[in-house]
Length: 490
Image (tube, rainbow, N blue to C red):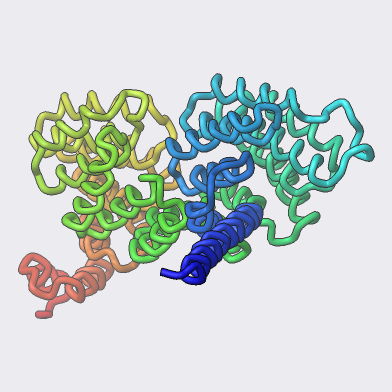
């Protein structure tokens, strides 16, 4: 082989290496830009192939991993960034955010303290450039998020007030203050701060999201949904808005819409099991138990200890009447991860077995976990109803209605209780409310007819029995009642 051949080969290899380096550097720069724009999935794909040989490469790849839910990998790369340069504030702050998301609030606080050591906090805003100010606000805002999650709202407000010194017009600061006051339950102050954020940046997704959260807390679900839709439209990469959309759709029994929202959330945060778990819950609500189990098994294959997936698998198994297996999955959930819904679901095993004393033990735990969970009182009412304790059942059912339950079945059960207690006028009243909320529940028409019959309002009973027969044309009892109260066959 000639010298020219070897030179050509050498030039080819050199060209290839140079091209790869240029491509990798280009991906790094594009990936960092994507992180700064909040396009974390895109950033993840770009930075994956970039060389992780610098502080920035590790930092921004770690941020992309964190924001897409891969916490363990994120922690590794952020720690690698600190090894590259342990006197820069950004990596410590991101590590604090990772620990906070894992509920390690003390460890997170230590990282924010480390980060602040390297911030130019002794300087005034006019002595700093935009990037320095942006870093200060990012660190203090993240520190505030950790304080809020840890229940230290006053400390969060201090951090955000300190941030205002450097940029009094920054929407992120006011959205953070909104979050702090929301956590305290001071809804008007929260609303004021979210609205202030929107003045500085119209259609700012975190502020719209916050307004939606206020509405949700106030049980104004339609308004909450409207705000979350706005937030998602304002920023198609703002994952929390899609999660809240899915949650509200789920509560409204709009399971196909919930599935669509949770699928988008899962696309944005693919490393987290949360999206898939709630996606499974939506299929469960839709009645597709096998699909729900398939998704939950995928989640548990990656993380067998994930509490939410174990809970929801137990729920599905209850509906499949595999009670012993359901209890096995409930027992895998840590006590601190149990909530009112889980205890309420667990009680259904014993309600179905007619072991009511045991069912009430779990329902009491559910009430203790959340005294304002309307669905718990509904389940408690149903258990008492099944034991034919109609008076006690009414107390629980009326509490669920008072708390604003969306499920009209609570009204129907209450109406049936009134019938068995011979309080027919009250039965008519509560079932009329049920029909106003949802006229497509057949049993509401049947039992309002029965209550009308109890007070000899035959014309009204006739009309309701006829309406019920539109839903259930082959019900022999209703057919007999039509003949009795209407004087005619269907």
